[in-house]
Structures are given as structure tokens and as C-alpha cells.
Length: 330
Image (cartoon, rainbow, N blue to C red):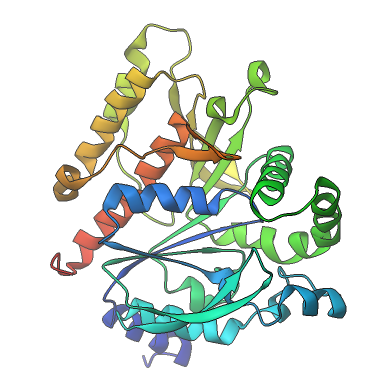
């Protein structure tokens, strides 16, 4: 039976696969850059090319305000160029990527990007079209508790982007419709959904004690974590710091992996080593020093649930690399 045009294009993309691609999508200030940075440090900067799909805005900040359009709206972004560039990166070919400067709200000169063996694309609209989605080996959607995301956005935009608290709250209100219409629906395409949320005893404490719930959908093969779960359960406390259960997400079955925000540094280190054993040949090359690091305003802190999340995502990249046999030489 002949292949339909869409199937033929997807088959060609598989044949031409020269890189392993990870897509990370989420609303503004959902933690996309933080997750990306940890994975880059883990696998080595020389091995990972990370780009932001938000660089493909059509209009600068002044123009968007005059037009009454938000950056979350696909009509405000060059979706067709994003598709072209994602396919080129997938094929191991260089691109001339636009650069949007969040500090100035305008565009800087474009940047020449030559992909390495791993490519991470993080941003608002990475899963918007099927062409873009088909480029990724692994798709992650970040869905922190909304009150947390608002807190993170206020802190980031007031400390790094020169906004006042009132301006940030106004922007959040103006983006509500587009967030619900264009960002949240992309959750349905993710292989992994990451949900950070505060436990009751630390709701007003720092973010280092956040719990994380990972929805592991059966769209990709997830690692057998039985040894990790068994080791986590051997700490002698009534509730293990890591648990796995079968649940449902958006009406469909999925494994739910929970990591307690109060997990100790010692237990995290033990579990990181166990997870590292799942990374096979890349395990000896991993840099664990910067795992779980995030910025709380201008202060660098560490979250152990974040560290384990970054390692789990890295596992998928490494196993995808070994599955298709891309050269380890570059």
C-alpha cells in the first residue's frame, strides 16, 4: 500500500535522523530554561545544542502592544520557519536562528547554530504543529501548580527583565485567553508531564522542598525503575521519597512517578547513581555537580526532585541515541 504524503514525509524524517531532539514546552516561567540547563550540564555542553523557540516571534514588544497580540499566539510567531529549522536540526544541518532579546523586547542579530548529537528546543509553541512534534524523540510539558508559576514569573520578570510586580500581573491577565487556547492544549502531545507543587508543610517555604509528579505516558518506553523504587523504599520511613503508581491522565492510563520534596541529599545521591546505571555508556561522562540547580531571584539553590527529573529526561535522550546508532563522535 503506498504511503500517504504525510506518512512519506515522516518516514523521510526518520531516515534522515542525525540528531536526538528533546522538546520542552510550557507556559511562561514554567521552568523550561531551568530544566534545560540541568540536562545540558549533565550531558556536557559540547554534546548538547539548546535553542529557544520563542526567538521566532514576528513582532517586537512595542509592535505586539500596538497590535494587541500576545507572544503566546501562533499568529505572532513564524511557525513555518520554526518547522523548517526543526527539520534541518533533525537532519544535523545548521540554521541561522533569529534572536529575541527579552531584556530589550527587540531582536538581536541572528545566530548561526550547528547542531550537536543532542538538540533541546524549549519554548511556548514547540508542539504547535505536527511537523514540529514529529521532529522530537522526547516531548516534555511543564505544568507546575499555577500559583507557583505566577510566583516564579513575578520573581523572574522583576529581577531580570525590569518589570514591576503590577506590570507582570497585568501581563498575566492579558495572556490568560491565549495561554488556555494555545499553550495548555500542547500538554496532550507530551510523553512526560512535569508537575511541581508545594507540600502542605512547605507551601510558603522556598522552592527546594517542592514535590514533583511525573506523568509517564506509554508513548515512549520508560526505564524499569524497580531497583530505584526498592532502594527508595528502604529508608525506613512510613512514606518512601519516591513512589510509582498506575493512574490516569486526561482520561488515559499512565504511570505516575512521585518524588517527595523532603528527600534528603544522601538519598538523592544514592538514587542518582542508580539512575546513572540506567544511562549505560554515557553514565561515566555525566556531570552530576549542577543537577537540580535553579535560580531563586539572584540566589543559586538546589532542588533534589528537579535533579531526579533532569536525570530521567536525560535517560531518554541517551537511550534514543543508542537505539538509532547515531555516531558518538559528533
